[in-house]
Length: 441
Image 1: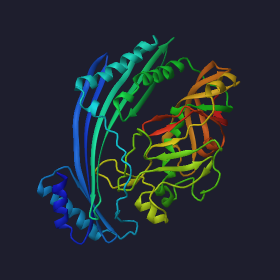
Image 2 (image 1 turned 90 degrees about the vertical axis):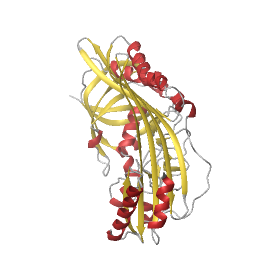
Image 3 (image 1 turned 30 degrees about the horizontal axis):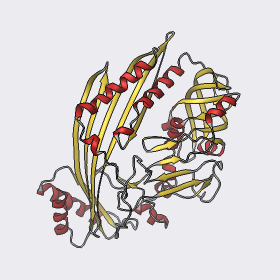
Image 4 (image 1 turned 135 degrees about the vertical axis):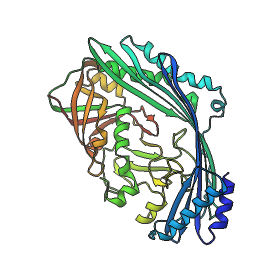
């Protein structure tokens, strides 16, 4: 199908630069309820987009139809738009493909498994949750998803890249009930290979978090030492990830503006975006514009090193692309975004720290992350968790608020664990932060 699009583009777009992007996604989804498959769906989404450059003026259009008429209309629309849009020096296409070692994760074994065997994962996850603790009275949702994705990128400069990948996701929410109180918590993860999707780990986290918050109370307002376990630190990191992009820099929407080579964090903090991370959810050979993906160190031992770029933001800021052009699907232009984004694992033993510490607040849930300000770094979040004393649970707390600045989290990190864990494409080890204000009664 893509060949037909390219043939028509070559005829219709003489004198223009152009780019064709094709994507096909085959999605299988199952939801379990009371150990039965309640909802099952199988769908295929496919289409192509055309980007046309008339000098530095850009036109863009897409279609889900591959009839000759639809292809011609889509190309003509993109062409006409390129004739009326403003010129922008940031608009250009890659002109040479750099050879690189192939990075591709495709689970041929799982793709060829009987569908029924894969759908059973949703039921298996629900069973694991309900059997872990008698206080788990319900599972609100237990879901399994398989995505099989094929992409092709071709442009008028001779670039041609074909890639494929598999993605497996499981998510569950557990409802715990005890002494008239009920609490709900959820957990999820995504992997490139079905065999790496650890349902036991997902179930354990959901059960631990929901049961730990039963009969929780509030506390008085004070400064505390906070333990941000991987799931909590990952949420914060994801919330402020846009601030690390060249787009945020151009728009003046980042707290890291004018901070290159400045110390912005504890020497224990190193933050990385690695488009080639082993089995990473967003790992592949090339980005959405054909630039080789690589490991980009953004914060090195506390020092800010730079921003993530695609071709556009690199051109506008006088930098080079870092291989961070991302497309969510064929309906959108490439944007600059994170790939596999994480805090590097440290050397600290968090379990030992908990055994020795007088008072530590382990954060289970953060609420209101959408209200955080990526420009200033300020946040004020509802929270719940557990207070540990010398390794023992002192009490469970909820109805509290933690407030501060993302830079405070980074600067006041005193321990970074060796327990790096990814949730989707964002990861972190446990991070211990001192002196964070916790508002309660």
